[in-house]
Amino acid sequence: MENFREHTKVDAERAILVGAFLKKNKEFNDNLAELTALAESAGAMVVDRFQQKLNRIHAATYIGPGKAKMLWDRVEDFEADVVIFDNDLSPGQIRELEKIIEIKVIDRSELILDIFASRARTAQAKLQVELAQLEYTYPRLTRMWSHLDSVAGAGGGTAAGAVGGIGTRGTGEKQLEIDRRLVSKRITDLKRQLTALDKRKMREIDARSSSFKICLVGYTNAGKSTLMNTLTGADVYVEDRLFATLDTRTRKWQLEGGKAVLLSDTVGFVRKLPHQLVASFKATLEEAVNADLLLHVIDVSSPEAISQAENAMSVLDEIDCSQHPMLVVLNKADAVNSQSQLETLQTIYPDAICISAKTGMNLDILCENVAQIYGGNESVYKVTLDISDGKVQSFLAANTEIIDQQYLENHVVIHTRLTSNTLAQLKSLGCGKIEAV
Image 1 (cartoon, rainbow, N blue to C red):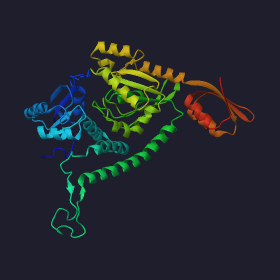
Image 2: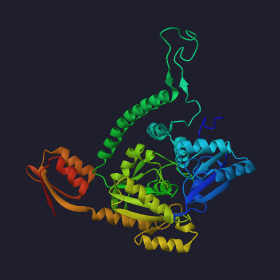
Image 3: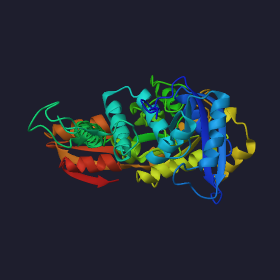
Image 4: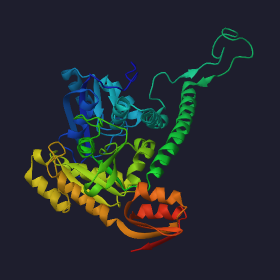
């Protein structure tokens, strides 16, 4: 059989999308909108959509041999190059489907991994994506590719001495075992490299522990990068496509009253994000885990806004930060298509703020709300320390808002505003006396 899996990229290929759902599943997606966006983001040209409700999942072909034959007819009619399933398929199901429809078949996770691979720019992102791809591939090596045959030992299976002679003959090693050993070694190497990068990343996060940290989270393409650029004057890359940026960026955001906070942008979320990606991007997502406040950005102009918000929350659950203090931001309110959907979202999130990151609408209200939350995290303290303790004085000057400072004979009294993080860090420095005012 021809090998259709020399690569899984779909750039510039004609694609048929397939969505198969169990009839008992109430979440039937009747338009494959998200998979369409993913496929187009990967560079494919969507030429047809094929949807089926199933009584049960067929073990060999997922959709059943009859439906697979119908799919083959569609492939012929539309001259498709690839079929993309909105489901995760087993290696055996992919192999059997490719036998029937005679073109490449990839599943949802492979598509997302391919998009991430094409978007990775920094060394860390490239390592994270490669690790996710290999961890997805490793348990699926069995019988997926046609080259996984036995590699005869030198002389094995041949006339005596034909290759390597006496002492070199044997049954040989299966190519599958060779591949698995190589993949396993590469996974180990990648994890070691990422561990070193993760430690550096965590040191960077720890170094910012005295600052009030805000993290933008939400569904991919919700407008997080545009919002960050508008609020901070940053130059984060922006494009109207899914997963346009993968790397976390942190910038200083100056609030009213001279208060400065740190604002971070994170990789966007998507429905059924492959857990391999969540695991490999753990250090990147640590920005959200360690944030003092999450800004959950929702694209209210999308017809799928409600489900996208729910999917983003499920990812936040997965990384254990759904209980963090959170402010919901309903972005692109100037381009809303459904007033009823907007009203539903405002009912679900009654404290949400409607904004437009592109036009600047209501960003002043967003800033005021963030400033109030930041202020509520602060308290005034009286710090008394030895006049020679320059380390603590430098720390307070650099990381806090000093209200008053008095130098006495052998000590200094400082009244300052401290966040809970700054207070903890100040105590760790072992300064003199700290009293709440």
